[in-house]
Length: 127
Image (tube, rainbow, N blue to C red; front, top):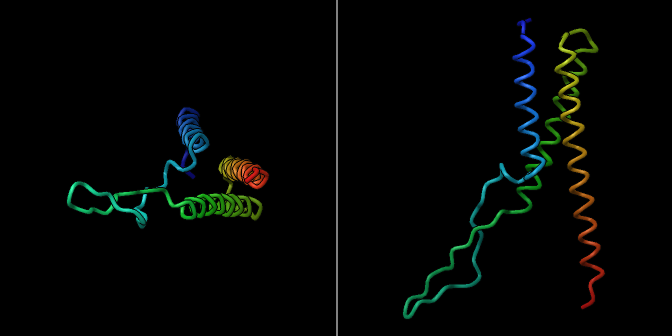
């Protein structure tokens, strides 16, 4: 096993914490903007042009986030299993992976709860 100094480990953990903080503040930041079909058109004097419109496809963004959380869970499970079976002695890595999976799942649940709450508010609106 490769020896890692305490300073290198600290820098690596700080980098991971910074990445997680960016994801927590904007979970859609790593998603791409894709073109969407346009229903309307833009007219200028004599020419008719399709209206350029781009939007983040919600289903793709949500699927990407769910896949990421699932990947974190599977990775943590693999690392913990390897430590328990004695195939690895990277207890710190397993702990960090487990915490990362737990934090991502908790963030996902908070987003889900907020979406459900907003949906309920929309349903209660008078027409």
